[in-house]
Image 1: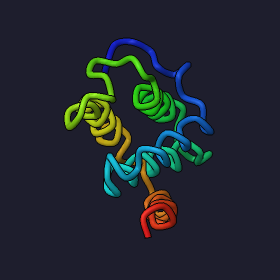
Image 2: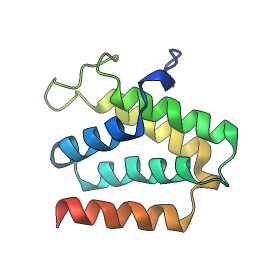
Image 3: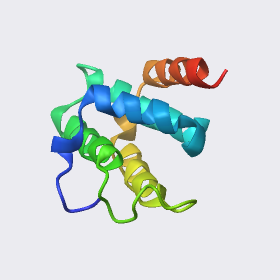
Length: 112
């Protein structure tokens, strides 16, 4: 992940707003991955170290000034999703089926 701390950029309402507003452009699969992270973060069983990783990755996604600006067509979110993929791989053992199910249901509400 990026060496800068983006935890101050992560705010749940802003995060959900950004995912909802960008859902069509980033696609259902990407939106679901972000929502899985969100639900894992909110789970009291998720250890603090994993929550820190999730907050940093979600903060990077929300933070408007990152390595590749989000407004650049096609590649704008590529750096964000490299960070997301790294965070998911790091905390994978703490992602539960119910996190995935909640994410699927929320994405279905946006896409169906």
